Image (cartoon, rainbow, N blue to C red):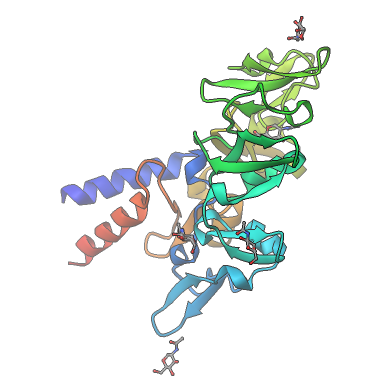
Length: 284
Ligand SMILES: *[C@@H]1O[C@H](CO)[C@@H](O)[C@H](O)[C@H]1NC(C)=O
Ligand SMILES: *[C@@H]1O[C@H](CO)[C@@H](O)[C@H](O)[C@H]1NC(C)=O
Ligand SMILES: *[C@@H]1O[C@H](CO)[C@@H](O)[C@H](O)[C@H]1NC(C)=O
Ligand SMILES: *[C@@H]1O[C@H](CO)[C@@H](O)[C@H](O)[C@H]1NC(C)=O
Ligand SMILES: *[C@@H]1O[C@H](CO)[C@@H](O)[C@H](O)[C@H]1NC(C)=O
């Protein structure tokens, strides 16, 4: 009975959340899709005997799908062979310095500024040092052209000094810390007469989907309703809306008939584990 209550509490927390930490975003995989109607045939294989849905292997994906599938598929694009392959480890990947942002397309990787090779014009990737979409080790070695809102472990951001043409670490805690329209990052802020924080209600229909927190560590989901953009309430989502409206972060649970998070931030497979426990206790 105690475990039942734990499961139930988790369910409530998951349902009221519209802001997720980055580690919970885009984490659904085919195993989370419990009904054939949800088991997307482009990415998953439905086993009619077992009634299970499983990930297709990376080798079957086009370049677009290879980039598009959520992290748990463990797929990366090999630019040499032009094939979709299993991701190995961040440090195995090297790109041209000007294309360093490709490290962020891999799985939980960032640019390793200490490996910038000016002769070869290349840079290597490394494991992400913090759960931020824009994580970087330090700003001073970042080329001026690539100096765009990267976030350092001490919570500063790399911003262009347009006069000195250098990349400087600045303390940014709120949108108003971005002094000019060019520095005002439109993933979390917008420019009025000053740089102001985004909310769902500000967004026009074409970008009414999500926005990032200022440190790129959290994502807030929004939904277009009739004529305005509002905070997404996952409890109102239907089966067909569940995956796409949450960027593959929530999947439909046919038992509860609710749209539920695929992975909780704190425990790696937390929700599924409790969900299964909950189910087995209720059935027994
Ligand atoms: C399902 O079971 C049938 C009959 O046992 C078998 O022929 C078929 O290969 C199975 N399909 C899968 C996908 O395992
Ligand atoms: C991803 O694929 C690599 C290469 O096969 C494997 O070593 C690694 O364990 C996989 N990672 C996950 C999370 O499945
Ligand atoms: C891409 O494929 C080539 C040829 O098979 C291989 O040598 C290389 O290690 C692969 N690149 C990565 C980053 O895995
Ligand atoms: C840009 O760099 C110059 C020279 O180091 C410095 O004087 C100036 O304050 C910097 N500008 C900003 C906006 O930080
Ligand atoms: C702002 O920051 C985000 C990450 O939060 C990044 O993807 C984007 O390229 C940045 N630039 C603009 C113009 O929004």
